[in-house]
Amino acid sequence: MPMADIPDALRWAQEMLLAGRPAQAEFVCRQVVQQQPQNFEAQLHLGTALAQMGRLDEAESCLLKAARIRPDHAGVYINLGHVYRSRDLPAEAIRFYGQAIERAPSYAPTYQSLGSAYREVGKIDEATECFRRAVGLEPGAHRVHSNLVYLLYYHPRYSPEAVFAEHRQWARLHADPLLPTSLHYVNDRDPNRRLRVGYVSPDLRNHVIGMYVEPVIQNHNRQDIQIFCYSDAAGRSDELTARLRSRVDDWRDTRALTDEQLADAVRRDGIDILVDLTLHMAGNRLTVFARRPAPIQMTYLAYPGTSGMAAMDYKVTDVHLDPPGLTERYHSERLLRLPGSYWCYTPPPNCPEVNALPAGDSGPVTFGALNSFAKVNPQVVAEWAKVLNATPGSRLLVLIAGGERGSTEARAMLQRGGIDGQRVEFLGRRPRAEFCRYFHRVDISLDPFPYNGHTTSLDSLWMGVPVITLEGESAVGRAGVSILSNLGLPELIARGGDDYVSKAVALANDKPLLQSLRRSLRPRMAQSALTNGPRIAAESESLYRAAWREWCSGRTG
Image 1 (cartoon, helix red, strand yellow):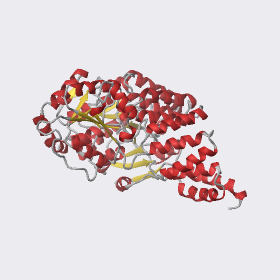
Image 2 (tube, one colour; image 1 turned 60 degrees about the horizontal axis):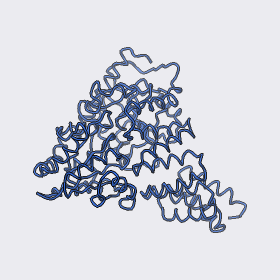
Image 3 (cartoon, one colour; image 1 turned 180 degrees about the vertical axis):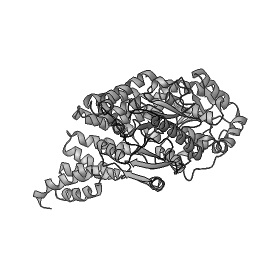
Image 4 (cartoon, one colour; image 1 turned 135 degrees about the vertical axis):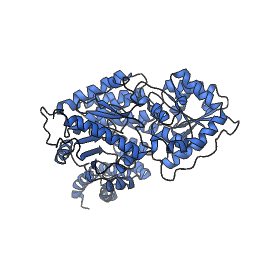
């Protein structure tokens, strides 16, 4: 490559990285590196390309070379942080993100990445501060602010009222200004006609959202509902994407569309009911909903929270997550309650069989805390310490990014809360079927709070492991209530910290009951609403139809 062409080649490589084409960027950067091994941009872009392709060791080597060439450049340390997060080592990532902030203290994305890494190791205060710094640096970036409002559900010192207030502030800043001054829809107001329902998500793939929406879409009555999917999963599509795509009437790949372009597409499709499947999680399209492209808009299956938006008409929930009169004040939406379960559970392919009780007839029990460590906080640790201290010989298995290698700070947190480190084993994250095998070592799962386990609790129960949960004030803290109520196991639902401890200890001391639950939980789940796709699809359709008939009867728009 002629020397004069190198700057243009590197600019092209950077464009390829931004376009998600790392292989092309790698090819060009390697040619440059052969001629100019000390070329900073070539090493940086090559390391970034390799990281995007999952070749993390090679990526680290290139990025460290770039750091030696330009030790003052923040971007190198940001990318090294990303490499370590991809290795499931957030504690190491925190160190590199900190070095990046030292060099570029006003770059908001670094604070977002640092906040996410802090969240993964259970440092919720630090994560909150990072996200607030990012919001302060980019006050107009709605997804930056979404990181904060979603995180606050995890924070034990934020009341449901305070969390809702932050959601409303998000909407006032990012959503309300986009609301059209006048609304006019040409949708035929026939209350009984076939409905055009659109699902919007970046996660119509091998992701928990894809897993939960698949049985709903699969079992929709296609004579009553024409299904549209607006998917931002392009580039990450997989076999679940292919199955979903084959089961809908119209599929739109929307990742390349701006929010305004996506809103226009929804209008052209004449959607009657537009359903958000993301809320404030990564990749959300809430500002599409803020533009009100459909006469009825609702959120469902992301997590049982609120958007905070006036433009979101409804939230689909269930009677256990949001009992009438309990949680309405924490929502900007009207609540549409399913009579059974919010979730429809599908076990992973190749899911292991249930094994015998690890404790046997008389051995000490093993407790499991296999949710994301982001849900662990000092209040939770204090209750777990009481449980362990009241059950001699018991042990605790804890999930943490990186397993034992990433456990230093988590172990210190548990020890500060009164848990003997010798009684704890840290397990790393695994593909879902392998993760389910962890439950072969667990007798009882302990649900965190204020943000309960959702999929983890369902996996635990499918593997024959009962879950002790603490009833919360808001829907995210009532997931255990919903799941256990649908299984007919209200005796596992605690009404306070003391009750949580006493229920866990009593169950640990009742081996016959534990063995009975071990044998019966999977068949019980298989016969419950938790796995009944046709029922949940029919119930959701009933809610859609009721909302549609109300709009047809005279709602403005």
